[in-house]
Length: 466
Image (cartoon, rainbow, N blue to C red; front, side, top):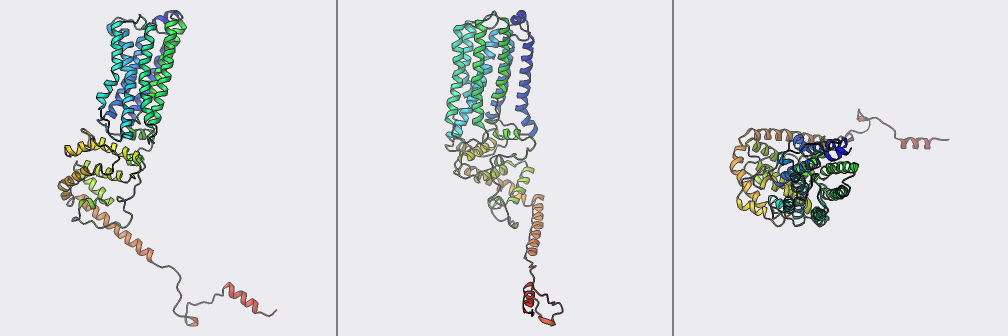
């Protein structure tokens, strides 16, 4: 026990390493399976990369504890095995610090989008290094002063600054979370933020207790073994509980919760509960399509819109129609429901408007910047200018070819078939199956039969003499 307590390699150390490996496997499954199962295209925005950075930071944190505490009993021969590499840099700026900084950036984005109703004024790739600066400065200072001993333990005079650095980032996260607590989120973002605060605070408390015990009682072997086991297991629980996909990828989080029913929430409109009704739903007979009518009026017919969208997809130009469709879905959300409107607007911007989006639209720079710099993401006329540009593009590039395509021929045939079926249904419903009185009465009617009613039977019995 004394030997492995100093050099590492105790049975409990290997158990803790196995637990950390299992937690990383579970974390990788949670972060990658939704993309693999539902075939969701990878976005190029900060939402995807923040998730990737969180996974990398989680791995760095667990690996740094294993290496700095020497749980696997690896003989230190190379410079990269130094305590300052793992305990100062990988465990700090590239581990827990990076993990907390990513969550602060996510909370900052939620605050600006849902409270300020505008896109964040600072890009994530600028904000993240800025938040990480105190961790980098602290690691550089420790590397310069070299207060760590051969077992990667630092003196008590360093304890308070390190704890204050951890607490500072948690306090910043608490402040932002408090500012958005009144928002009625649809994808459990507030719950995930609170869970992250609780788990990180608990982990810091456990780490502080373990480090104090390590520093004060370095001569007690079992305490050294137990404390580092607790450190790694706590970190393993932290990386699993801290990870959240709902903040950056809300639609993907709903898919991952319903893997057996991936189509139920395949679109943001369905996930937000937007009813499939209104202008885009035809409940009456199929109307005749006149090619001479304006395209924007024809697209109000749901069947025509679906046919035109299929044609646009076949021409590899379907992004305009998909954008048109989702903007109309946005129009179904009441103006007095800003949270759902913001969800839908942000989804449309990330999918169609931002540079490098999966279905980026070919629109003018002025219209693009007008949306990206808007002061109200819930404004009902937010996408009007882009709709006009997209409509003009579709009229010029798609509409003329559509009328001579097989998609229009198929649409006409289906419309004709449905129209005939509807007329037959109306004809059948118009038939009157109620009983009619014959025009011939009495004995002259060969089909007339006297069926005494119950009432007449009683009268007969009443008239019989007793």
